[in-house]
Image (cartoon, rainbow, N blue to C red; front, side):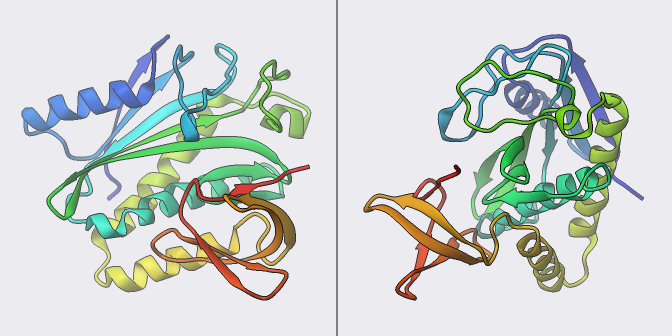
Length: 256
C-alpha cells in the first residue's frame, strides 16, 4: 500500500519548503509523522532555486510544491538516493507528455537544452541517519513568457502548444514519487534497489556520453559526461582523457 499523502494548499506563501518543514516538525511532536506531507501553493514570494537563485513562476500557472518525508532508516551517507528518486519520478511522468526529458546533474529537469523544472532538497541529519527530507519542486507548466534573465527556461505549455491540467499532473507526480518511496522503504535488499535506481538515473542524464563545454575553478574546458557516482559526484572525461570528479557547485554546465 502506498504511503498516505497529506496535502496542505496555500494561495500564497514565501516558500513551500519552509512551510513543509515547520508542519513536519509539528507532526513529529504529535507523533504523526508517517506518510508524505505535500504543501502546494499558487504563488511563492521567496521561492528558492539551487545556488541561492530565485525561481520565477507566474501566479497560478505552474506547479510549486514541496514533498516532506521522514526516511529515518536511511543513512546520511546515502542521501543522494532521494535526489535520484525524485529526479527519476519527475522524468518518468514528464516523459508521458513529451520526449527529450533528461536530468541535468544533480536534479534539474530539462527538455532538450531548456530547464523545465528545478528541485531543491534539504535534509535534516540526526546522528548518522536522515531524520527528515524536504523536496521543493518548481515545474513550469502553463507559463507562456519568462521575464527574468534566467538563461533557458521553458514550460510544458511552450513545448506542447497547449495548456496542461496542473492538478492531474501533480497527482501523477505525487503518485509516482509515493510508489518509488514505498519501494525504498520496503526493499528487502536496499543495496540492490539503490543500484537499480542509480542505473536508471544514469541513463536519464542530460549530456551523457556527449562532448560539451564546462567551467570549473581553473576555467573552461570540453569534456564528456561519463557517469555519476552513487554519492553524487559527477565524473567528466576531458580532452586529454583525464577523469575529473566534481561535487555539487564545483562545476558549471555551459549551455549555448
